[in-house]
Length: 433
Image (cartoon, rainbow, N blue to C red):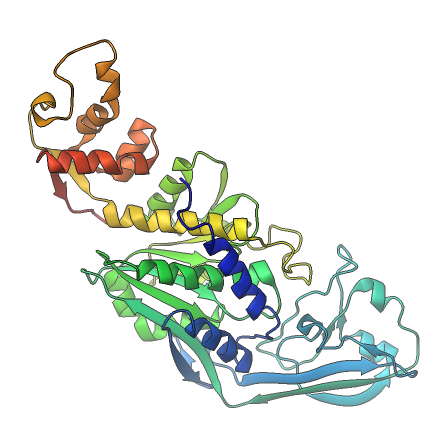
């Protein structure tokens, strides 16, 4: 399977480059700026949930915005300059303008011994504190003395912002797609999912669809919880398959985190597509969850959803550090993720249970599907077609038949069309889990 649009990976990479400098968190102007740029590509609608709103078991926090942050030594040298890299500031840091000793300052500094040259990503969303991420090599060079600490931020009553786009199909049954927009400048962990979902939105709208598609851009954890608090009954009634998109821009192996019991329709679809590509991939249990599948598959929610990645969250060395930059994502990496997801949608659109209308093998020759002259090689020319009819008994869908025959699922699409044109095939509804 090769992409028909070899430029789409480059376009996604360029969108990531545009969004990379913006400082995002779970609330604030950085989220809105990011969503408004995405809105230039697809017609998403922005929604605001006020601070203090109860969303299931959680409360929407105050809105956080930041303008500047750094600290100065006695010689006036500047460290952890927010304007140089927004990972330097702990997300949700409260405002500070104080002078203190190195000993006191050091209790607010965070470094990574395993990555001494990297800035770590640090957050404190639900407890007021402040801090800086600093490379260990730089931290070790700080000299005893007095330091001026300056953080120009505010925590005020405001809103949590998310966006969605519902693309109607012939049916109200939905394919649900979600990604998060809550991290600062990290390319794979933060921006690859929104870039991929944006371009999948463009692809979905190119032609009429059997199913409705719902695209959701939310801040992690609190965002899905807020969204579920407003849409749960609709989602539980309509969603047939869901995909959480995260860390999809690198060139490493494909991965997915299964739904809670690993037996949903989404599990079957993505497993079939990845197996059909005949390349290795990593399947993780729900016990290895780490992204918003935690909320979408939670007890009582139970959406049929998997989380799709190249490298799963937390498994690659650059994760949650300044090393997760534009060097570890690539147009080819994005294009691969795009191919997998569009193949999943093609399968969902085409899938059905099929039943052959004849008893015993159908006579293919009189329908122009087989040469009337029997030769040693003639049977092999229609073997896949005959194999398909052998398992088209009304109980198997394309996923099951692909597995039984050991052929890529997209090799079955033209067979289905030929048999339909010959009025040999009856289509039956899928039984979703």
